Image (cartoon, rainbow, N blue to C red; front, top):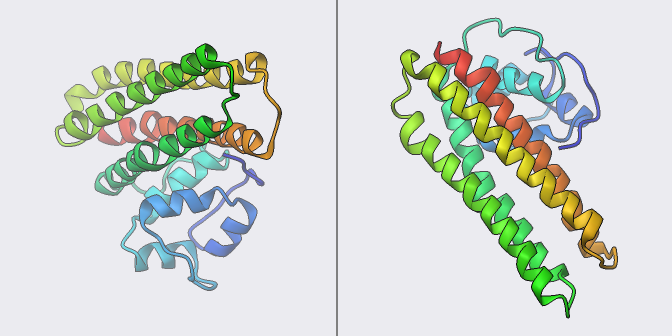
Length: 217
């Protein structure tokens, strides 16, 4: 996920300024259910209007923009954080990963049947691992999370997040290094989408590791 500006934002900054300096915020907004068309309202005003906890929203924005060193001014609102994470899971499972697979099938070169099958199999295994992990969180972690479970979840999260990020990086490198094909507009779009997905997953994992787990403690 590309960012244009690494800096500090507060609840009095306008949301339009935040988006103008970092368009990746749009993806964050969509997972909070925040619509566009808010004029020059501040971040706090827009969050309040849409019943989104401002500190939780800002904490995620600060991870995105490289200002994660600042601790939230007030405790994060766990229900808002969990709703964001659930919506993020829906984004990856129902939109982002299926869209990448659809693009992948359109750029595979004819005559490379064995290689094409291997590429699709690798991606499908990756997507299945992501689904398994995210559905486990949806059904087992979020409804029943307790302070006593924090350390166990922390170890499992770190291991699974690292595996997911590594698998996607390897898939991207396999395509770039070993899949001989013309760099058409469609192939370029696919690779850019994979790079963006890689960064989006890294941010999502950071939200769970650096915000969710500390919040339940």
